[in-house]
Length: 409
Image: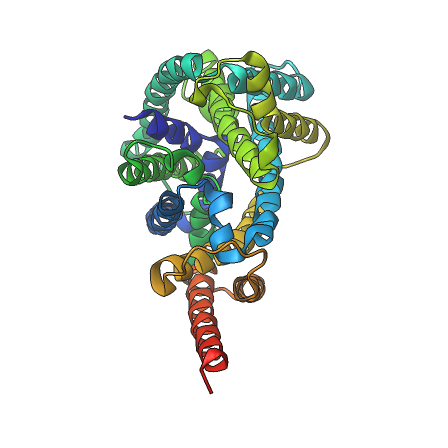
């Protein structure tokens, strides 16, 4: 497994992914598995397309969006990405601290502080040391997750799985949307890692496949724990599995490795807004610790804000947060897909692209409107299809209008 694929494996080994899988309990094992696999397959396709767009333009995710939306237009999505990254930092630290507290009662605030500090240390380790530790940590996480999976799913053989209780639950379409939303949240980050690889296309597929398979696994662990053991608290699942200290390791370091990706993406989005503030770093052969701090300062600030937020605010329910991410980034990638793969828009140095802006606004509104209806296919897929169609039509009409205006008399 390549270094980048290993990083994306770490992104998927996440408490938030397990909890989201557990939220599908009312669908039962069969329908739950169906929405997990289908939703992640859709998410995989979107991640690959987003990564390929970055490869084509040899830019990170947010800077690649400038091709469609213009230089200033891309700033909106860089800012929105920074906002969602702060939100994710807070949610991840909040969930991890509650789960860690259930195993070792140091106090919620102290666990938030410990996880936040470990994340900052991980950010500042540098490529050389972080890569070596990453291999060790990921190997241990993989081993412990296999043990956790065995303990949970051995309940199937013991006949512990039951039909979900009646009452209010989520529909197939809502479950599908929750399954798509997690990989969708990584769209603004995937190209930040893959566009500079020696074999960027191959690396993109490898990283996306690794994340998707690991994410499916985490969702299934959450679903299985909820349906089989009727337990959705991660700490209790770990204790029932006999993973005391080992469970604590999973909880803390799965949060740290995922939060590192958020911090790195925050760096990239910030430097997309202020490119002049970036200095040569370790990847360019500069091993200065001061420059390392400067280049990671946005991610460190992101982590600090997220840590404080986790200490002060309740963040148990992330459903609305996932829907917000979908409503922003689903139409964004739709416009880019239409421009890159259908219209084949040529690269220009435009400040704001009106067509892309109008298409995105319409797509955003359509997504929010579709949320009022219980569609079997969720909201993301129909919203993206409509947004792609609108973008193509507007592009074609704009080209025809320009040709007519510029036509010699």
